[in-house]
Amino acid sequence: MAGKDFKARITSKNQLTLPAGISAVLHVAPGDDLRFEVQEDGSVLIAPPSVRERLAPLAGRRRQGLGKGFDEIDAEIRSLRGPRDE
Image (cartoon, rainbow, N blue to C red; front, side, top):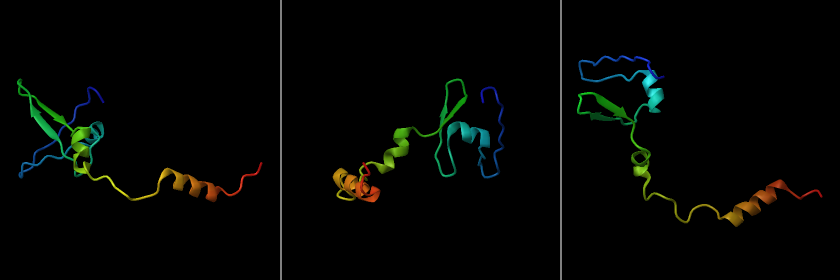
């Protein structure tokens, strides 16, 4: 994608539609946030949120006491497989 030129127009409501090629490069989808950082030379860096920022809403939400332990899962899989033919 290097060297590809993308254009977008700002609407009367000051909104911008991100070109599909840029969305693909940034791995963003509708509803995702973007970060705009103005550089000293006046250029603007556009970046998706970091992995840490994306996972922040999930912090502290781990499930506790739910589900089965390893031994229970292993026993269930063995029962589903049926008897071994040797």
